[in-house]
Length: 355
Image (cartoon, rainbow, N blue to C red; front, side, top):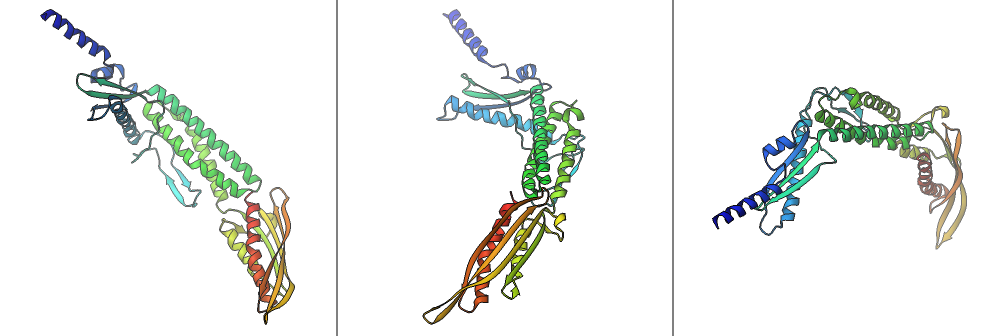
């Protein structure tokens, strides 16, 4: 009987050992997942009261993943050997200058990492009511992924800049300005991948990191920001009449709204991106008496012509009219008509120059 118990105990021990993964102990991890070749994360825990083993495993997998990412993050934050150049970036949103941190000698305070391909395993130790999770990724695999990410990011940046150049050449500066807003987060993604490459492979050089390509695209981006900083150059000819007098307010209202788009007004149509011609006049329509009160009605007719100077195209040409009324006189009725037609003229112009 004693021999039988010893044999059973030995069999159970061997079974437990056979089920044990090759990363459970420190020595196993050092032998099978050496730090020179892997980034790893480990998490130990107990199955909580009312918790299934499966749920405990999923919970510990998250903790192990965080542990691995924290390890990589610390290395990236402390990395100071990159020779990437410092660049002065301008925000495309508010056009205010911000400084892109140099990677020559710096530590970053916070790095949000996205690491695809992390492998996660979990094991339950029935003898200890213990659950263990392990996360790992081979550094060579990570290098290949980050190299692909850098290449993909730079290709996307180049495509966006090429498209923006095309838009500028066709007089579509507003569309170009919107397009290159997408470049800034892509540069951040590329930079993060380059940092991780340096950490995963300390022998990575400028060619591997594609630093020359990154700098060239950065310079192209900065040149385009400078070109687009002043927005559209607009030539505006606006002649608005109100019977025997001019109605100067219409031109002021149009200029005010277009200025909000960052537009600059020029005195020569040939120096502009867009040439806009507006001709408006008021005409008496009717005078009517209603219960002892006289009402005056006027129409304002406006002719609008919009030309894209870069292509020599007349993009828009049309006439619109609006009716206005007042109880004082025809002049006040004309002002009321201009009040109604002005926003419509502005809306037409904005719609056309944004195309």
